[in-house]
Image (cartoon, rainbow, N blue to C red; front, side, top):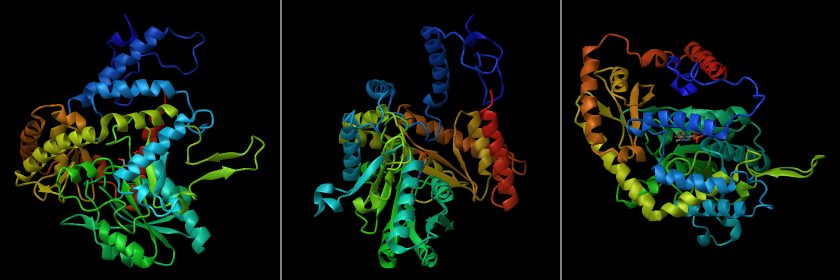
Amino acid sequence: MSDLDNPVKNCDPFKPYKGRLQAYERIPENGRDQAAIIQELQTVSEEENVKWNTGRVSGTFYHAGDEHRAFLNKVFSFFSHVNTIQFDLCPSMAKFESEIISMTANLLHGDASKAQHPEDQVCGTVTSGGSESIAMALKVYRDKARAEKGIIAPEIIMPKTAHPAFSKAGQYFGIKIIEVPVDPPDFRVDPCRVEEQINANTVAVVGSAGNYPYGLIDPLEALSEIAIKRGIWFHVDGCLGGFILPWIERLGFEVPPFDFRLPGLTSMSADTHKFGYALKGTSVVLYRNKDFRRYQYFSFPDWPGGIYASPTAAGSRSGGLSAAAWAAMVYLGEEGYLKAAAAIMQVAEGIRKGVESIPELKLIGNPTFIISFRSDEVDVYHVNDFMKIKGWRFNCLQLPPALHFCVTLPQTLMPGLAGEFVEDLNAGVQYAKNNAGKPAQSSALYGLAGSAEGNQAVNDLLCGVFDHMYSI
Ligand SMILES: Cc1ncc(COP(=O)(O)O)c(C=O)c1O
């Protein structure tokens, strides 16, 4: 009997393998058999894949099918051992990364060939993910503002709906982040309220295309104008939308300008590891020109180990990931990305119409690939409790309570999924009505956040969760 057949199951959701698989506190004295390791990991992987292969999990898996993944894994294997930072030894890295950046810039209307001078070309770097791309842009603004404007207490203004990666980078780099609330009915930031926050320390303003909570595109044209008028820089976070909005636009859906067509835009993040359908671990940060990018680079000549330099926050990175991102882009081509976006929008439109047909629910904004809704009549967290039983995994939103479902490719592989979604959602609303007045399971944590004390309680709880996760 293998460890995996052990019927003793652990009900701790973070430790389901406890008592089922051997736990290693130290490196085993004698190595294990490769075939046994493979078998064990294959079983675990297949068990976990079942959870989202149903298409009932929002976002998370930007998966373009088993064949696509097998192809990327093969590409990865050729360069898994290569360090991108050693492009002198492996010039393939310079090829992959320069072409990923160029393809992304072109997709986002930063066509280098249109620049009058090479120094004015849109440029960028490949990073390990959206958070790093955002962090790099913020570091650039902090350092450029210090060097060129003498600003030593930099501030960045963003809508409350911008991703926490901005606050994280602000904390890491000592940049004050000013959040501007978004309000009903459309839950998009009011550009005038952004402008009111600008002062002598403001270095940049941020907008999303689209934002994580609602998938909505901020009023970027207005933010771009404000940035130009007030002489500040402007980052658009396209981590989520950067690799799908261009195709949705080409399909004829209404999408306002969100990229380098905006004259005030000075940097943009776009994740290859989301709707670029690459392996997890790559993103692109783009800059209007090399003057910005230069502030991202780190070099340290004065070191006994030699002269050190790195273009991004990471030191070593696996060349396999960059090779796979490059391969995903050239394999899918415009045709493949368009086909994927069309399939996603078909499901998203079905879900959107379903939500609109339920009188108790209120759609938030004018969505594309993320459908979010709230309610004045039922507790949406009750709806979530019911949908969970049916195998659906939403993203729970707060301030105000709402739910979102992000359509990715796994949903498109399940015929009739939108219909099932709407049927279950109707039943979920009925369940919420029947349970009105009782506390919903999903709201346990969300009720806490929003006050200093509550936030502290949530912080403590989350630290406990991480500690538990890292315990054997
Ligand atoms: C809009 C947006 N920006 C940034 C990020 C951060 O990306 P990552 O998780 O790759 O660091 C996300 C992740 O979901 C996102 O949705």
